Image: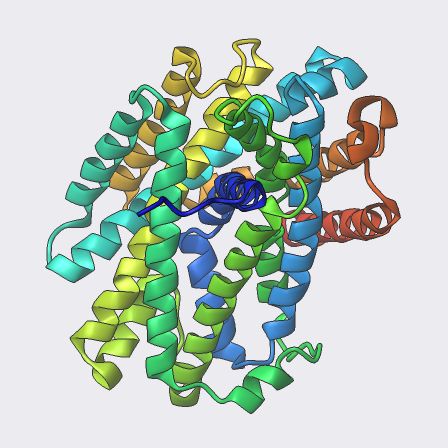
Length: 416
């Protein structure tokens, strides 16, 4: 019996599909590191306090995140040097150092929240102390750094955690039995009384310019693993979009669950773990544990991803490069994890002083990072045929206005 004949076009299609699936990694990593425990808390609170009426905020934030994440991916594809190296060429070494050090300080400040999220998720499910699990999973996170190819490990870990989160939240969604008409109506923009603070907080955290900035680095790390004959466009066109759309789905599902379960009962939430507790009386232990598994996925993915951003950008800013295989970069990533774990164990929560400090740095840092990305993505000499098209220019400019508006609002709230 003769072997089946495989047409060359079939081989080409399979190869193209495989490359596309590989290229999803950077977008998935960005989605996972952005969707942390603080995001879950804000999203749960939006649904608990205002029902489905703020669904449109998720759509707006995700739309602009797609624009800038795709921009970051194209910069990473077009350039042979890192994004901070491009900024150094354009505006000098001091500016690159300010960005790298600033991002390191912000990620370190917020890292305690990720450690606390991991500890609470496991502690609530097992009836143990959170501090134990904070130590365990930070040790695991640091251990992952010293595998031979940290990027491969990071990519596989994030894909697995995102899959766990999707399963947990979507299953919870079906249990919650939401009002479909209410969900649809929520996409019509409205601003309920008292909701502006949550809208600003969610938009600022979901439309993460730092996450979009880091996409350029992830694309370059992924490119090192690709076949030499892979087309550059493979890495930039829609690869990042898929991950950010998954971020939007997870955010929307958590909001809908909170709107369906908590809002009718008038229950308030101050942490994502309270959402899990609220599910138990209605749907039993299974639903509560399922949501806690999702919280663990969100916390651990952010714990590793957030630290990777801070350590990589500081290493690049100080001239050590941005390669995730570089030992100095690994030690800086580990430093972020250790600092977050120590703060989590000592205080049991993110200290107010650290929140204020991180917000203060972010207010001034994020608009400049956004402007720098936009400027570089418009330069034909850097980008070639991957430079911003007219659509990206228009919506990128609108995104910058949104970022600046958020920064002004945060500054007024913080200092006014």
